[in-house]
Length: 328
Image 1: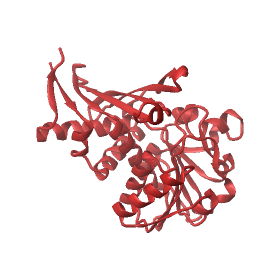
Image 2: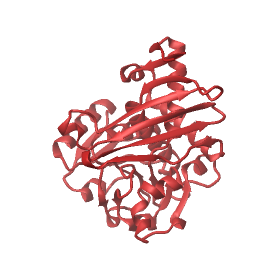
Image 3: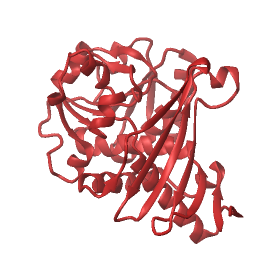
Image 4: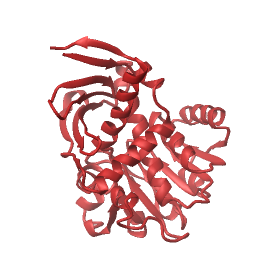
């Protein structure tokens, strides 16, 4: 039994952000039509090491794509071990036989598909005339979020804030060169977001960093950082003002932006308007007015990974990329 191995470098040459957005949008359409199987994430915690790993299986029935991603989150890795905070490995298998098809790096795909999810949300929820993007957080995920938004919006200005000013300045220089847009760094959140049409939060915060009074009418927010219990980036009052769309309701309740305010009774489940699958399949309308505030609560779904991986796998086979090994 031969299995195709694909490295991060090989995957980089096989897929663009536009292609990932297309794959992820198809995944949300399938979810909205009820044609996916996706059990909740399972968590294993390594308390003494300050990290965890999550197991994320999924099956997209019409695509006939199935597999599982194993992904860790170890915030101390960069400083203590010179390793990324997040690393992932993905296994695809043949639904017909259960035989493994490919084992590939999932770290790059995790970043790309999360950025693509934010892009799909903005496509349906942000104002079409959105031109100014504010980034709260300037790490790896901020980059793919901005790359994704650049595919669906005509960005003219990017405003950046990070707790580490050097990170913010470096990110600003890199993105200005790559995207050809004006970038500005600000020391405070209020200044960063005051003229923003779209706000993206990509921090590991466990308390609100974006306050209700900072958000003007008509703004769309991609809340990306809260992906585990106890994490929180937004003032709960924002959620009460906004049309809140999640990627998956059960997963968001457990570990998304809504998890803390729900647990504290500050919002209710009824304050969640829809999941993104319902929006992209037009079961519920997305943005319906210029002035409404919209929030996308992203926790990251296995269907996003598997849809993207399936595209990469088929393209790699077609182009003769990767290395085949005998597994059994």
